[in-house]
Length: 559
Ligand code: ADP
Ligand code: MG
Image (tube, rainbow, N blue to C red; front, side):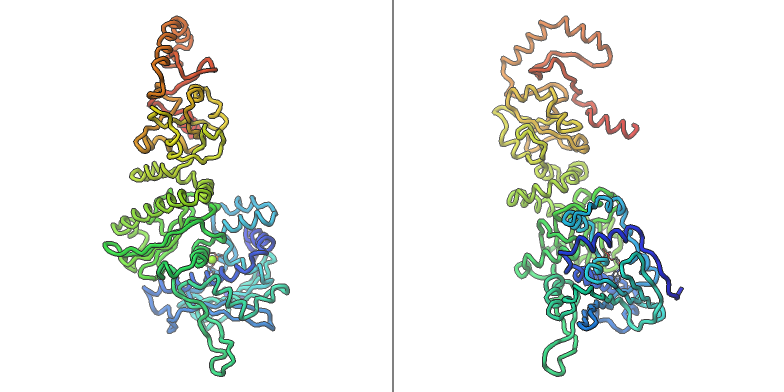
């Protein structure tokens, strides 16, 4: 196929374009970061492909990105000599969105500019951000190694359609030409573009070049590098500003909010690698989609190897983003090799610890930010005790619960908070699980705890009971479900309480027997209890039986 054809965008693309043009107005500069980011990714991909086949360089091995503008024509163009795209690649990459769950995600958008711009940020804007400032965009591209006749010209005015045709192209790689909207002509300006490159793309790994504008003859018109062009993680920590860390995060995470925190470490010795890990502020739209891409960007000796290398972090830390650059792995490393490589295993153990330490530090130094993290990612972290048995104490320290102490549904009580409020003689951490916070809070099981002033953690997330199955103690104190087994209040229970219960049991022996008979085999046993102060009776689960919430989940799953 070489002829010109007109194709329609996928419905989701049309929606996204419409929303982006209308809600990202106050963030419009980001188009440049997104397009330079794509150019940088394309250079990375070429360098990786050329490890196996260096003819792909086509005698032009200097990887670079060029930024040109024409004030009169009102255009800005971004040119890379990276991997390029075939005709099919272009149709696929610039005409559709492949992420699953996109349609459902787009339905949540409300038309409220502020809210939507946040949501779109979680989704990632990418190439289509070009249309925030341009009313017409052209793409010229040729796949590295393909004959010049296989060059492709794509064009769209974001009106629901694009055209595509073949066009001979001498140079491999991609040029994006933005025909700026009337009111966005200010971007066709050397000073403005230079400052945006500095601001957003200083520390990508490749040079961004612009034509010199100096007065001197001989210099004027030659391309000069306008960014720093050293990969951020290779610099010493002391030389990196917070702003630079934040911009780099946006480049690798496709997010446009700042990260919550980060951790940058160079490790030498038995293992030799550098890691730069970030915790995002907001959950991506597909956090609970188990197929969604996750993982770190992997480099080996500063050469990009792959995105979404999943082997370096466990699933319950899938919200972490970042880069790992190893000097121990081979440049030929593949996903299959990563899966059972002992170096990877050791790095993963270290990365896991690093993320947990980062969260623990955040919780101590910036409790409000930590609370924000918890609200976004808490339910993911709750998968931790089951997945990562060896770190369960550490993970437990990061958990936050609703509690009878606050009486509110917000999950903001840590186990350390709980322990600091334990009564004299109390030796267990009490909790209750239920379908909802309200149901738990009004449970008769809490009566005696209220009377004695003992705090009880309130667990009502779907995952909670399952998680508690993997946590038996914290800081040497056992967890106790208040609706399970014999109630042991430790030394908080007085001799008087015990005596009172024994007497009551004697006194009501006949009644107990009659109730037992009436309920027959529907219950195991009927007992007198000191659990209750107001309610006449309550149901208790055996210490080792499946909990009520778990039972419901299993029933719903048809078991
Ligand atoms: P993302 O970068 O998150 O994948 P984008 O919307 O920015 O999403 O880009 C979509 C896809 O288009 C990219 O994944 C890539 O395959 C392709 N693409 C975009 N720009 C370029 C480029 N300059 N060179 C080669 N491919 C590109
Ligand atoms: Mg992109």
